[in-house]
Length: 491
Image (cartoon, rainbow, N blue to C red; front, side, top):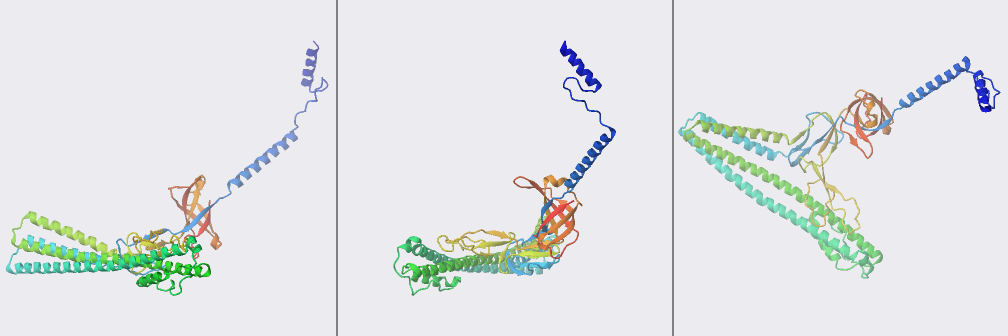
């Protein structure tokens, strides 16, 4: 009964807001209007500061890596294999659309065009004769003479081709012998180096090195291969000694090996050029023979048509043959035009490869790395050297290296742009026409621009997806060069 009375006392105290019942603390009085206003003001100020901080953070721009790039890049090569006769440009040169940049030997293309034109002319004469037959004694004699002259031309072309093939075989055989001699010299000197200058050989040798033959003598040209081989043979007659003489001997022998390597590479490159040249000559003579044979065939057909009865089917067949010949003329005319490289647009030459006299085709210029790195020699680990020659079969002792084709020339077109890589998480703020700021650190230069377009093909990295965004510049500084790095902010 006592607990119930105490509870009633507590409830009564709470209801009246007074203390004094049990251990209850005095109840707080309600907030006054002034205190409530201060609290509300503090809440509003805090919210404002939060919104300001949010906008400040969201307004912070991110810089993206970019690269100064041309509007368009052209990689220019000849349409068919042939020898370069003229290379009329150099890197950094400004060119205009339609300007001749390089010229290729067009003798084969010209011969093929002449053959096609002769065949087309003969076929046109056949069609005319069959449509309007006028077999007279004079036309019969003229046709017979044409057949006789065409037969003589075919015989002359066949003889010329035979002579060319025989000469080509001799030329290639001679140069192949030079390559073989260079390979033998290189192998002999490399074997002697392995025998006399390896760690095992040098530790067990006591005989002094030779003094009558210096391996450093001789010329690195292909014509001196035999002299180098004789010098090597004389050097190998005596084993080297230890100490300073041994080191000098091995150094001289190493120099000889390097010269052998250069001679071998030069001989292989010359063999490749010889093979390409004789192949082009053979194609030209074959084209002349084909042209003569076509003329003979047409002359014989014309002679036969003058005496044989003409039917509609015969005329249609002659017309079809004429159409084929005319199509071939058009094809060969295009091939002759392709022996010149014309600038497809105004721009500047960024890079050239190759030189006059080299054989260049649709794949471009072949970069040939010579045998500058040979196993077991002191040059092992060197960078070698490059010759811009067609690919050749690597003989014994040669290093295949890294053989790659390069375009004969590279053309950049204006104006310059900047390509930035933007991560997918920021692409929502990128759109065509968006403003951009570009900073080129190398020039301490800042320029403005606008987003021109976005490549939809994404660039994947290990953890992020990027998109290439092209930015046009509001102004092009003359110091800007394609390939310079830049920092880009968008928006």
